[in-house]
Image (cartoon, rainbow, N blue to C red; front, top):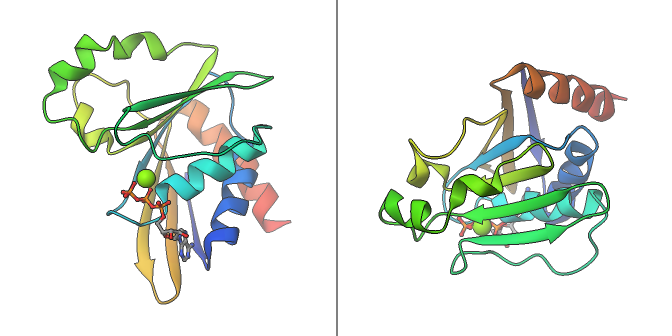
Length: 156
Ligand SMILES: Nc1ncnc2c1ncn2[C@@H]1O[C@H](COP(=O)(O)OP(=O)(O)OP(=O)(O)O)[C@@H](O)[C@H]1O
Ligand SMILES: [Mg+2]
């Protein structure tokens, strides 16, 4: 399934993240694609807020992964922009982050090709005048169910 939405401004981007969070289930993997500054981290901030996290959400560009202990699940926010060799991901034990009890939100997932699990939902962000075009595509049955829920939320 495929959902598309034009989103104007940072607040609206976070709001879409919040809406998406209520469709997310533990065990899911989400890739966020789009150029530098397209709003990937902003969307993740909204998702984490929606899952009940109130603190700051910074880009894990240098730490590669930032963990969040949420009441319902664990979340891991990855930014693989600075990863130059997939071996770095092996060394940090990246596979251990993926489990039925955690949700993984990944920026620059292409740097981990061959190592990371496939995405349940792929979110692609592109520039439009004064905003961003957001395309959400499911790649698994779990992802499909999530986007069905999201569609009901954003069209109601
Ligand atoms: N829908 C939107 N419309 C307009 N501006 C937006 C929107 N979403 C995010 N922005 C702005 O885009 C800028 C970059 O956002 P963000 O840091 O989330 O991008 P990113 O894709 O994570 O970048 P990077 O690849 O560097 O990690 C921020 O200033 C944010 O406010
Ligand atoms: Mg970012």
